[in-house]
Image 1 (spheres, rainbow, N blue to C red):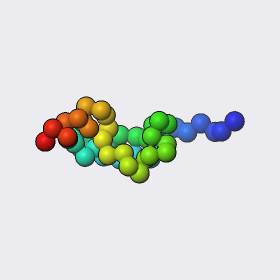
Image 2: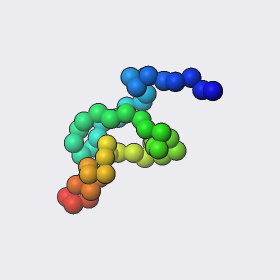
Image 3: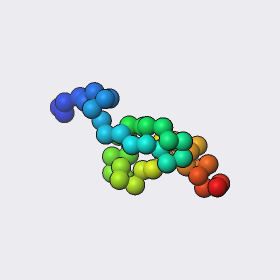
Image 4: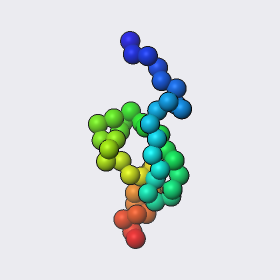
Length: 49
């Protein structure tokens, strides 16, 4: 079984919309390089502009 990682050890980015830091999520594993927004809300707000 794979070793568990602490949340502080996961990669992090800063949201383009709200400028808040967010960490890697398992659902983003395959597309981490393309992720720009911390949430669906920030993604929608960016498209409205």
